[in-house]
Amino acid sequence: MTEATLRWYALVCRRMGSGVERITTTSAESEACAHGDLSTADVVRALEFDILFGGLRPRERLVEDALIHRFGAKRHVVRQALLDLERIGIVVRTPNRGASVRDFSAEEVEEITEVRETLHRRAVQRISLPAPAELIGQLQAIQRRHDEAVNARDPRAIDDANEAFHALLFGACGNKLLSEAIGHYAYLSRAMRLYPLVDPALLETLRREHWAMIEALRAGDRRELARLVVGHIQHSKRIYLEVRGSLAGDTDQRTQRAPAVRSRGARSKSIRASRPSPPSAPRRRTTHRR
Image (cartoon, rainbow, N blue to C red; front, side, top):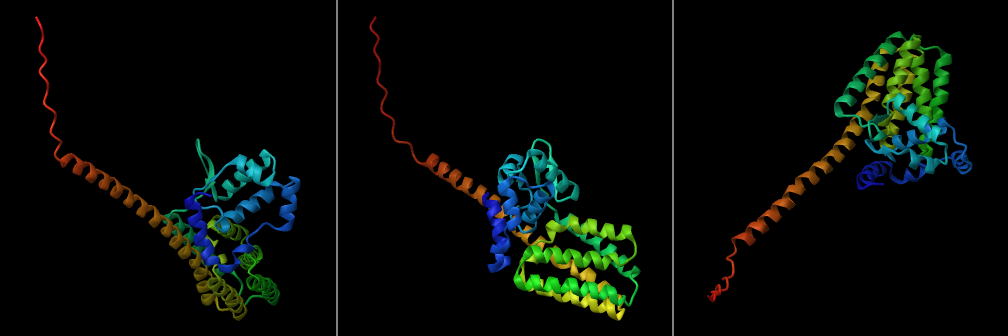
């Protein structure tokens, strides 16, 4: 890893605490790597989790040869995985540089969050309230799974249960295109949503918010449900911008220090130039014989 990558990963690890060691490949993935039979979906999943948990930072290059060596996969598998990640929107391709992890600017983060807020509010308006007992029971079952994953500090299981919870919740709006749009922007923002998964205190807050959503569905409280689903997506936006700003601050400090070094060198040069030169030896007269 580069120095910048290590700083980025360190910020994530500090939020993760002692659970950082849990971010590893599963036994099935390790076995597949050993036999060199990883599918495109396996590589996509592995890279997605690297991005999701800070192993790959924004703007970091994804070199095909390095990925082939890491996964023991065929070149066409790795290439297709990068294309799939580009289509999802969390990887970008630059001419003459290849693929790299997408870096969301502060403006893009705000815009994506605004679109998600609008879609979530519209879905809540369409959900039949109070929600049927069957939907409540299904959401409760998923949330119990989410609780277990949080208690076990298992990031992969947390992410799986979280995705299932929101897919079922917004699927209840009865508009397939609307729920698909919600899913698309949720997936687009996955790189922005990694930090709540590595913050124990925030994980507990999100877990409680899930149960509050279930209660609002059961009680038929549409206003409270709308407030919850909009507030729920603000945490990741705030943390992503904080971490991104920290990295930008480090870059700014390095940029400011560089001219200072040059200026000290320039002062030294000027000091040397101002010192009196030692007296020059008298020039000898050369006498030419005729």
